[in-house]
Amino acid sequence: MLIDFCRFPADLAARYRARGYWIDEPLTRALDESTRATPEAIAVIDGDRQLSYRELSDAVANLADRLRRDGLGRGDTAVVQLPNCAEFIITFHALLRAGIVPVNAIYSHRQLEMGNYIQQLKPALLIGDHAHELFATGDFLDGLTTRGQAPRRVILKDSPDADTALSAWLAGTGQARLPADPTPPDEVAFFQLSGGSTGTPKLIPRTHNDYDYSIRASAEICGLDRQTRFLCALPAAHNFTMSSPGILGVLHAGGCIVMAPSPDPAACFRLIAEHRVTVAALVPSAVQLWQRHAALAGPPAPLRHLLVGGASFTPEIARAVPDVLNCQLQQVFGMAEGLVNYTRLDDDPETVMSMQGRPISPDDDIRLLDETGRPVPDGQPGALSVRGPYTFRGYFKSPEHNSQAFDKDGFYHSGDVVIRRPDGYLRVVGRIKDQINRGGEKVAAEEIEALLMRHPLIRQAALVAMPDAMLGERSVAVIVSNGSVKSSTLRRHLRDLGLADYKLPDRFHQTDSLPLTHIGKTDKRRLREMLQAADARQGVPA
Ligand code: J2J
Image (cartoon, rainbow, N blue to C red; front, side, top):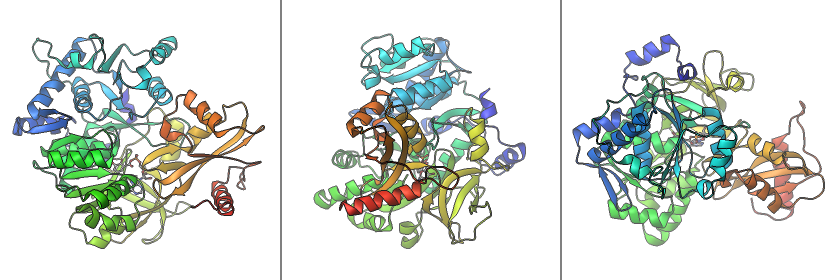
């Protein structure tokens, strides 16, 4: 049962209800309420299409009904992969309404990631995009069939075949509307994707209650209202884009979402001007691109408010936001596992430029620990662990990993190293998880190392983060091989395994042996120092 993966202890659940965080409503509540309040207001703009709240809700109910009349519903799961488009929002809500539990894959995910989610979830339904390379040939679906993993139903956006075309599934059934049948509010509503630090991507069960609270609170903290026009430029499936305050926060506030295919500044500035966008959310690397563009083209005029998060943001670049982009900055430090921190709109400028915010909830219980697990005092860096009303209680079917990721009190170790000010504000200063944060996109070192080791000539592999002026970090694969292997060969090897492009190492470096720690693990700190020294010798800029 999916409930087994998201159960909060009864005492905490009672407290979260008593304090009004959990309101026992389905996650479709935000859309339902705003549709009742302002049915004719525009909810989504996608290219030259505009959907009012009423039209959006109708499309959601149509798709939910079609799926249920096709025999899908409670007890089923779905793997969804759509680009930034209105259908992303429709599909997500329709699946919730029908009680089907989805995971939204990132659009850049390929065979390896998608195959993995399918293997873990055994979904009855796959919703994808016919234009995605996965469906360019029949190989991906045939492979699933061969492995006995083919979902019962495959629906594709823009499929030329009427049977599988999402547009056909969005048309009404002509039959009486079925009542909504979502999973219970304290059970899994959907799975979020973990940035990961292990060999296989992990799924994060999120309940209606916990996610809905984070959305209501985020919308309030970010000052969203019916006048909000939000640019959805980061991948829609990302937790930041969905919930901080994101797509769902805007629907809660009764505002309007303007879909952008990517954060490309030229296209985004056009959309901002055309649709009078007021709020946008970006990762730091995209902020730099926007700043460069604005220096030439002028600021994106109607934009008043920019949320920045997902990766470390230097105060120097942060300080330029109000001048160069002519809007208010709000920093956000969040994670798909739960905890989200924001700077507040009335914070003093120094706090906004130099801190990553404070938690959403008074009941976000944060502990900062030293290497021995003892609490560190304010002002000292410590490893963050957290428990609270919207932080998950365990990865899906990962008992071993969960025993490492949580302490005995149910606190989740996020792997971030942060400093806390006495007033509760946090600054992210480092990381102990074995991950590369490549411009906000997370790469689990272990996953790439294991895939590299599958090449017959590779004896050892280690993936490390090196500083990058644009991305913040880039990935370098250090390999020990039998004879020399070209970078292009290794890149092709990883692509042939079906790995998403953003996870391909930015650089390969061959060496004779990897430095080891005293317990015999690869010493990545030493490795980074060696790489830096080698770069300095060769005059490569840091
Ligand atoms: C430094 N590191 C940060 C920040 C996240 C809102 C915003 C972001 C995410 C997200 C999210 C950071 N400064 N401001 O889910 O709701 C790094 C940390 C964190 C990890 C989580 C949201 N903001 N990070 O980025 O699940 O290392 O969520 O643990 O993708 O990103 O990554 P993810």
